[in-house]
Image (cartoon, rainbow, N blue to C red; front, top):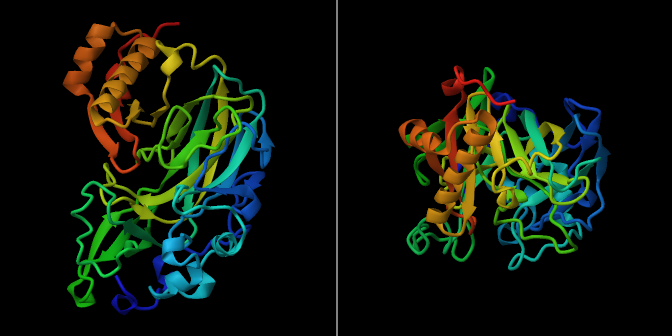
Length: 385
């Protein structure tokens, strides 16, 4: 999409106000803004990184996150100039995004990932062998617009999509999208034709979530922000919206949790390379499950898993999609045998009859599979003590 495809964005009409740093509702006493000193770019925290805040288990935290769209070097590293091409005025661009773009925050476009990550935050008393439970209480759009990006050589169809005829070579092919409030949810909108706006727009539901939630790894080397792993990170499971709890095996003392890669919506697979990328203000609760990782069968390989009001969500991660699927099924079996005391063979039969498994994403090097297991199916099961 080019500047000729859009008209000036009417922010008031979208129903989502601009949430600049420190402005608008902040739902907790602990607030971590996405200032340059609180953000890592393209790398994830490690044990050697000092915390940007310290909280006790059970605390509620509000964290600002920033989308990398408009900040990246191949987009000009100037979000005000970048979004102006799509009818967004400078006053509707986030100040913290511009500050990071203008700052000396280190970022190597060729070697680092794209993600801006806020944190880390220390959770006192968390120790390796524990689980950190991160419950998403609220996700508020900070702007009513964002981008879906594709880059040549990436995504589910590298070499085929985006097509070589796209004029942006070698830069990204971007699609501008807007967000509109409606009741407790909302909807996204993107043009159906790049050259003829009169043909209308595609409309789809908003499902905000954070693609990156994780804990620090041991040592002094920061991991790349793209591939997910035991530490969590760029899991990109779209079910992890409001009400979801992500369980992360603690790697270092005090966990050092962090947040980033905000999305307004994502389809399972994330096939283009990114989804609807746009900045969010997140309010989360952090709790520690002492020894929680050690309670899991095969706990030496415990990967993150999640829970929503409706589902248990096992997660499998591997560069090979078949291996990721196998690991996701093993995680599902572990959850059913440990939490519900179900015989492993019966659990396997149940999963085949009633469990759903989906591809979370295929674009992050390490691919993801997640499952959906209805908790209501176990209403008549007596859980072990």
